[in-house]
Image 1 (cartoon, helix red, strand yellow):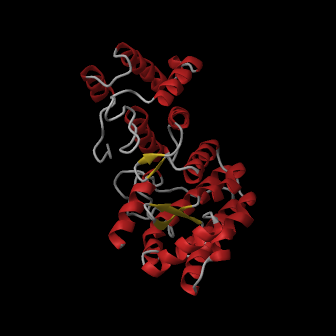
Image 2 (cartoon, rainbow, N blue to C red):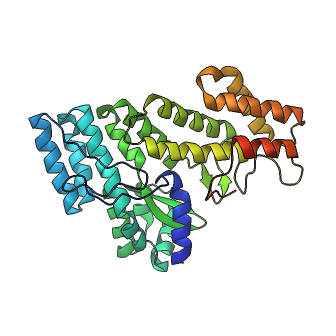
Image 3 (tube, rainbow, N blue to C red):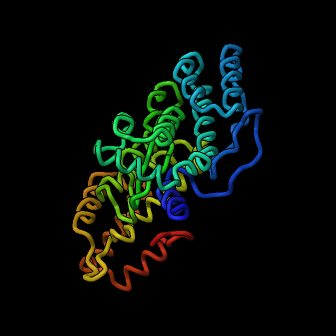
Length: 320
Protein backbone atom coordinates (compact mmCIF):
# COMPACT_ATOMS: atom_id res chain seq x y z
CA UNK A 1 0.00 0.00 0.00
CA UNK A 2 2.78 2.41 0.84
CA UNK A 3 4.33 2.19 -2.60
CA UNK A 4 0.96 2.60 -4.31
CA UNK A 5 0.02 5.61 -2.19
CA UNK A 6 3.33 7.35 -2.80
CA UNK A 7 3.12 6.75 -6.54
CA UNK A 8 -0.48 7.92 -6.72
CA UNK A 9 0.20 11.00 -4.66
CA UNK A 10 3.21 11.91 -6.74
CA UNK A 11 1.27 11.65 -9.99
CA UNK A 12 -1.66 13.73 -8.77
CA UNK A 13 0.58 16.38 -7.23
CA UNK A 14 2.63 16.96 -10.37
CA UNK A 15 0.91 20.32 -10.88
CA UNK A 16 1.28 21.24 -7.25
CA UNK A 17 5.04 20.74 -7.09
CA UNK A 18 6.90 21.76 -10.24
CA UNK A 19 9.60 19.61 -11.78
CA UNK A 20 13.20 20.61 -11.29
CA UNK A 21 16.08 20.44 -8.86
CA UNK A 22 15.20 20.87 -5.22
CA UNK A 23 16.76 23.78 -3.37
CA UNK A 24 18.45 23.08 -0.07
CA UNK A 25 19.91 26.32 1.24
CA UNK A 26 17.91 28.41 3.68
CA UNK A 27 17.92 31.98 2.37
CA UNK A 28 17.03 33.45 5.77
CA UNK A 29 16.76 32.01 9.25
CA UNK A 30 13.61 29.96 9.33
CA UNK A 31 13.32 29.84 5.55
CA UNK A 32 12.13 26.37 4.51
CA UNK A 33 13.91 24.84 1.55
CA UNK A 34 11.97 25.84 -1.56
CA UNK A 35 9.95 23.17 -3.28
CA UNK A 36 11.38 21.85 -6.56
CA UNK A 37 11.29 24.60 -9.17
CA UNK A 38 10.61 27.33 -6.61
CA UNK A 39 13.02 30.15 -5.89
CA UNK A 40 14.28 30.80 -2.38
CA UNK A 41 12.92 33.97 -0.78
CA UNK A 42 16.00 36.02 -0.03
CA UNK A 43 14.85 39.54 0.84
CA UNK A 44 13.14 41.01 3.88
CA UNK A 45 10.59 43.87 3.95
CA UNK A 46 11.90 47.40 4.43
CA UNK A 47 9.20 49.04 6.56
CA UNK A 48 9.73 48.58 10.28
CA UNK A 49 6.09 47.64 11.02
CA UNK A 50 6.14 45.02 8.30
CA UNK A 51 9.54 43.80 9.46
CA UNK A 52 8.18 43.00 12.93
CA UNK A 53 5.22 41.05 11.55
CA UNK A 54 7.47 39.31 9.05
CA UNK A 55 10.10 38.39 11.64
CA UNK A 56 7.50 36.97 14.01
CA UNK A 57 6.04 34.93 11.17
CA UNK A 58 9.43 33.55 10.12
CA UNK A 59 10.00 32.44 13.71
CA UNK A 60 6.69 30.59 13.72
CA UNK A 61 7.57 28.79 10.49
CA UNK A 62 11.00 27.93 11.88
CA UNK A 63 9.26 26.18 14.78
CA UNK A 64 7.43 23.95 12.32
CA UNK A 65 4.00 24.92 13.62
CA UNK A 66 2.07 25.22 10.35
CA UNK A 67 -1.31 25.51 12.04
CA UNK A 68 -0.10 28.54 13.96
CA UNK A 69 1.42 29.98 10.78
CA UNK A 70 -1.92 29.71 8.96
CA UNK A 71 -3.68 31.39 11.87
CA UNK A 72 -1.03 34.13 11.95
CA UNK A 73 -1.58 34.87 8.27
CA UNK A 74 -5.32 35.15 8.84
CA UNK A 75 -4.81 37.68 11.61
CA UNK A 76 -1.79 39.70 10.46
CA UNK A 77 -1.61 39.78 6.66
CA UNK A 78 -3.64 42.99 6.56
CA UNK A 79 -0.91 44.73 8.57
CA UNK A 80 1.78 44.49 5.88
CA UNK A 81 2.25 45.72 2.31
CA UNK A 82 1.39 43.52 -0.66
CA UNK A 83 5.01 42.55 -1.37
CA UNK A 84 5.56 41.39 2.20
CA UNK A 85 2.21 39.61 2.19
CA UNK A 86 3.24 37.74 -0.95
CA UNK A 87 6.50 36.63 0.61
CA UNK A 88 4.67 35.42 3.72
CA UNK A 89 2.17 33.43 1.68
CA UNK A 90 4.90 31.87 -0.47
CA UNK A 91 6.87 30.96 2.63
CA UNK A 92 3.85 29.02 3.85
CA UNK A 93 3.65 27.18 0.55
CA UNK A 94 7.35 26.30 0.76
CA UNK A 95 6.92 25.06 4.32
CA UNK A 96 3.83 23.01 3.45
CA UNK A 97 5.57 21.33 0.53
CA UNK A 98 8.60 20.62 2.71
CA UNK A 99 6.40 18.98 5.37
CA UNK A 100 4.14 17.13 2.95
CA UNK A 101 6.13 13.89 2.90
CA UNK A 102 6.02 13.49 6.68
CA UNK A 103 2.28 14.14 6.78
CA UNK A 104 1.68 11.74 3.91
CA UNK A 105 3.28 8.89 5.86
CA UNK A 106 0.53 9.23 8.45
CA UNK A 107 -2.00 8.45 5.70
CA UNK A 108 -0.35 5.22 4.66
CA UNK A 109 -1.73 2.78 7.23
CA UNK A 110 -4.57 0.52 6.13
CA UNK A 111 -6.73 1.51 9.09
CA UNK A 112 -6.48 5.21 8.28
CA UNK A 113 -7.24 4.60 4.60
CA UNK A 114 -10.28 2.51 5.50
CA UNK A 115 -11.56 5.08 8.00
CA UNK A 116 -11.27 7.96 5.51
CA UNK A 117 -12.85 5.86 2.76
CA UNK A 118 -15.82 5.01 4.97
CA UNK A 119 -16.24 8.65 6.02
CA UNK A 120 -16.00 9.87 2.43
CA UNK A 121 -18.64 7.38 1.31
CA UNK A 122 -20.93 8.14 4.24
CA UNK A 123 -20.80 11.90 3.69
CA UNK A 124 -20.53 11.87 -0.08
CA UNK A 125 -17.70 14.40 -0.18
CA UNK A 126 -14.14 15.11 0.86
CA UNK A 127 -14.81 18.32 2.76
CA UNK A 128 -13.53 18.41 6.31
CA UNK A 129 -17.02 19.19 7.59
CA UNK A 130 -18.30 15.97 6.07
CA UNK A 131 -15.26 13.80 6.81
CA UNK A 132 -15.00 14.83 10.46
CA UNK A 133 -18.73 14.28 10.93
CA UNK A 134 -18.53 10.69 9.74
CA UNK A 135 -14.99 9.47 10.47
CA UNK A 136 -14.52 6.71 13.07
CA UNK A 137 -11.41 6.32 15.19
CA UNK A 138 -9.24 8.81 17.08
CA UNK A 139 -6.18 8.32 14.85
CA UNK A 140 -7.97 9.17 11.61
CA UNK A 141 -9.86 12.03 13.26
CA UNK A 142 -6.64 13.55 14.63
CA UNK A 143 -4.98 13.20 11.22
CA UNK A 144 -7.85 14.96 9.45
CA UNK A 145 -7.91 17.74 12.04
CA UNK A 146 -4.16 18.26 11.76
CA UNK A 147 -4.35 18.29 7.95
CA UNK A 148 -7.13 20.89 8.01
CA UNK A 149 -5.42 23.15 10.54
CA UNK A 150 -2.06 22.96 8.74
CA UNK A 151 -3.60 24.06 5.45
CA UNK A 152 -3.90 20.81 3.52
CA UNK A 153 -6.81 19.26 1.64
CA UNK A 154 -7.53 15.55 1.29
CA UNK A 155 -7.26 14.19 -2.26
CA UNK A 156 -8.07 10.79 -3.69
CA UNK A 157 -6.97 8.78 -6.71
CA UNK A 158 -7.08 5.09 -7.51
CA UNK A 159 -8.89 4.44 -4.25
CA UNK A 160 -6.16 6.02 -2.11
CA UNK A 161 -6.29 9.15 0.07
CA UNK A 162 -3.48 11.63 0.67
CA UNK A 163 -2.88 15.29 1.55
CA UNK A 164 -2.25 18.14 -0.89
CA UNK A 165 -1.74 21.85 -0.32
CA UNK A 166 -5.16 23.45 0.14
CA UNK A 167 -4.83 26.31 -2.33
CA UNK A 168 -8.50 27.35 -2.03
CA UNK A 169 -7.53 28.38 1.52
CA UNK A 170 -5.02 30.80 -0.03
CA UNK A 171 -7.86 32.65 -1.72
CA UNK A 172 -8.64 34.17 1.68
CA UNK A 173 -5.40 36.14 1.22
CA UNK A 174 -5.64 36.99 -2.49
CA UNK A 175 -6.62 40.60 -1.95
CA UNK A 176 -3.45 41.16 0.10
CA UNK A 177 -0.83 39.85 -2.32
CA UNK A 178 0.68 41.10 -5.58
CA UNK A 179 -0.99 40.55 -8.96
CA UNK A 180 1.24 37.64 -9.98
CA UNK A 181 0.57 35.72 -6.78
CA UNK A 182 -3.15 36.46 -7.07
CA UNK A 183 -3.20 34.74 -10.46
CA UNK A 184 -0.93 31.96 -9.24
CA UNK A 185 -3.25 31.23 -6.30
CA UNK A 186 -6.27 31.28 -8.58
CA UNK A 187 -4.72 28.73 -10.96
CA UNK A 188 -3.58 26.44 -8.15
CA UNK A 189 -6.97 26.62 -6.41
CA UNK A 190 -8.72 25.70 -9.66
CA UNK A 191 -6.54 22.61 -9.91
CA UNK A 192 -7.39 21.52 -6.36
CA UNK A 193 -11.14 22.01 -6.86
CA UNK A 194 -11.18 20.33 -10.26
CA UNK A 195 -8.01 18.36 -10.99
CA UNK A 196 -7.01 18.16 -14.63
CA UNK A 197 -6.34 14.45 -14.40
CA UNK A 198 -7.46 11.58 -12.22
CA UNK A 199 -6.40 7.97 -12.67
CA UNK A 200 -4.64 8.90 -15.95
CA UNK A 201 -7.87 10.29 -17.38
CA UNK A 202 -8.87 13.85 -18.23
CA UNK A 203 -11.63 14.93 -15.84
CA UNK A 204 -12.23 18.47 -17.08
CA UNK A 205 -13.52 19.43 -20.51
CA UNK A 206 -11.15 19.96 -23.41
CA UNK A 207 -12.22 23.59 -23.50
CA UNK A 208 -11.36 24.09 -19.83
CA UNK A 209 -8.05 22.32 -20.35
CA UNK A 210 -7.13 24.77 -23.09
CA UNK A 211 -8.28 27.74 -21.02
CA UNK A 212 -6.02 26.66 -18.18
CA UNK A 213 -3.12 26.45 -20.60
CA UNK A 214 -3.91 29.93 -21.92
CA UNK A 215 -4.08 31.26 -18.36
CA UNK A 216 -0.67 29.78 -17.62
CA UNK A 217 0.65 31.39 -20.80
CA UNK A 218 -0.78 34.74 -19.68
CA UNK A 219 1.07 34.44 -16.37
CA UNK A 220 4.35 33.63 -18.11
CA UNK A 221 4.02 36.57 -20.48
CA UNK A 222 2.98 39.11 -17.84
CA UNK A 223 5.08 38.08 -14.84
CA UNK A 224 8.51 37.06 -16.05
CA UNK A 225 10.08 38.19 -12.77
CA UNK A 226 7.68 36.33 -10.51
CA UNK A 227 9.00 34.08 -7.76
CA UNK A 228 6.70 31.38 -9.12
CA UNK A 229 7.58 31.77 -12.81
CA UNK A 230 9.53 28.50 -12.97
CA UNK A 231 6.74 26.51 -11.37
CA UNK A 232 4.08 27.92 -13.68
CA UNK A 233 6.37 27.28 -16.66
CA UNK A 234 6.51 23.62 -15.67
CA UNK A 235 2.72 23.51 -15.32
CA UNK A 236 2.33 25.18 -18.70
CA UNK A 237 4.44 22.52 -20.43
CA UNK A 238 2.56 19.67 -18.78
CA UNK A 239 -0.83 21.14 -19.65
CA UNK A 240 0.29 21.73 -23.22
CA UNK A 241 1.10 18.02 -23.52
CA UNK A 242 -2.48 17.24 -22.52
CA UNK A 243 -3.86 19.78 -25.00
CA UNK A 244 -2.06 18.13 -27.93
CA UNK A 245 -1.97 14.50 -26.78
CA UNK A 246 -4.66 14.03 -24.16
CA UNK A 247 -3.80 11.48 -21.47
CA UNK A 248 -3.37 7.71 -21.39
CA UNK A 249 -7.04 7.09 -20.64
CA UNK A 250 -8.34 10.12 -22.54
CA UNK A 251 -6.30 10.41 -25.73
CA UNK A 252 -6.86 13.30 -28.11
CA UNK A 253 -7.04 10.83 -30.98
CA UNK A 254 -9.01 7.62 -30.44
CA UNK A 255 -6.72 4.60 -30.19
CA UNK A 256 -8.82 2.52 -32.59
CA UNK A 257 -10.42 4.93 -35.06
CA UNK A 258 -7.55 7.46 -34.95
CA UNK A 259 -10.18 10.23 -35.12
CA UNK A 260 -9.75 13.38 -33.06
CA UNK A 261 -12.17 13.85 -30.17
CA UNK A 262 -15.09 15.90 -31.50
CA UNK A 263 -15.43 17.93 -28.29
CA UNK A 264 -11.75 18.82 -28.34
CA UNK A 265 -11.84 19.83 -32.00
CA UNK A 266 -14.85 22.07 -31.45
CA UNK A 267 -13.34 23.67 -28.35
CA UNK A 268 -10.00 24.32 -30.05
CA UNK A 269 -11.70 25.87 -33.08
CA UNK A 270 -13.77 28.16 -30.87
CA UNK A 271 -10.70 29.30 -28.97
CA UNK A 272 -8.74 30.08 -32.12
CA UNK A 273 -11.69 31.90 -33.68
CA UNK A 274 -12.38 34.05 -30.61
CA UNK A 275 -8.80 34.62 -29.49
CA UNK A 276 -5.92 36.73 -30.80
CA UNK A 277 -3.20 34.46 -32.11
CA UNK A 278 -0.90 37.45 -32.61
CA UNK A 279 -0.71 37.81 -28.82
CA UNK A 280 -0.69 34.12 -27.93
CA UNK A 281 2.00 31.72 -29.18
CA UNK A 282 -0.17 28.88 -27.90
CA UNK A 283 -3.15 29.88 -30.06
CA UNK A 284 -0.88 30.50 -33.04
CA UNK A 285 0.54 26.99 -32.80
CA UNK A 286 -2.91 25.53 -32.20
CA UNK A 287 -4.16 27.26 -35.34
CA UNK A 288 -1.41 25.57 -37.35
CA UNK A 289 -2.24 22.25 -35.73
CA UNK A 290 -5.91 22.54 -36.68
CA UNK A 291 -4.95 23.16 -40.31
CA UNK A 292 -2.97 19.92 -40.37
CA UNK A 293 -5.86 18.12 -38.64
CA UNK A 294 -8.28 19.40 -41.27
CA UNK A 295 -5.92 18.44 -44.07
CA UNK A 296 -5.90 14.88 -42.72
CA UNK A 297 -9.68 14.68 -42.27
CA UNK A 298 -9.40 14.70 -38.48
CA UNK A 299 -7.41 11.46 -38.33
CA UNK A 300 -4.04 10.80 -36.75
CA UNK A 301 -1.70 10.19 -39.67
CA UNK A 302 2.05 10.03 -40.10
CA UNK A 303 1.97 13.69 -41.09
CA UNK A 304 0.19 14.66 -37.87
CA UNK A 305 2.51 12.50 -35.78
CA UNK A 306 5.50 14.18 -37.40
CA UNK A 307 4.03 17.64 -36.78
CA UNK A 308 3.47 16.90 -33.11
CA UNK A 309 6.89 15.33 -32.63
CA UNK A 310 8.52 18.49 -33.99
CA UNK A 311 6.21 21.19 -32.67
CA UNK A 312 5.17 19.68 -29.31
CA UNK A 313 7.69 16.93 -28.49
CA UNK A 314 6.84 14.76 -25.53
CA UNK A 315 9.09 15.60 -22.60
CA UNK A 316 11.04 13.28 -20.36
CA UNK A 317 8.81 11.74 -17.74
CA UNK A 318 5.64 12.22 -19.77
CA UNK A 319 2.81 9.77 -19.06
CA UNK A 320 1.93 9.49 -22.75
